Length: 190
Image (tube, rainbow, N blue to C red; front, side):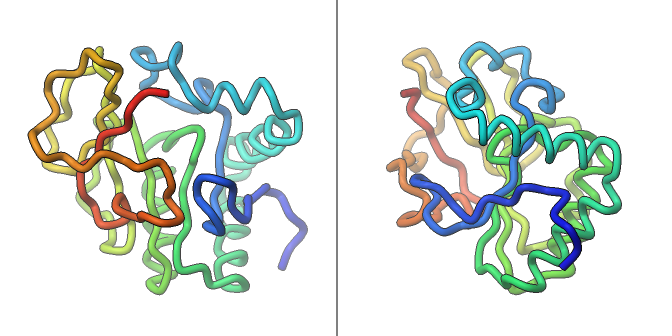
């Protein structure tokens, strides 16, 4: 494997042993005006210098050397062969080219299930492979997306648009994995 140009986390308390990659919250989120003040990732950004350094490193790689960044992700997946991989636990798709590159990564690794939440609702999701679950994040102040895709609703006590019987996240991805099945979900604000 080439010299690490990215910091891919092997997992964390919430995800369990699911590898994931993140970029800078707010800065690397193109549609966060409605949620930037409630961004859960900013807490980790402020509290943990090692997390902040890793996310900065990833942001720089995806912005300035995306070919090598995605090549590194590919090499990581070839070596580790994870069953699941979480894309940007913090941050978001940077643009259509970034989404397309992640789609190519997923296509190249059909044995891995990928998951990404996004507030970039205006991207073209028409060419997303089956093993990449994309869930559109919606905060109460945001318009509902027009695309017929799963939605992740943030319930802060004011969200009244959640369809009845929408699955409520129990808080532990490592035990649940509901979102990887391309279904809508409710996250209670905490």
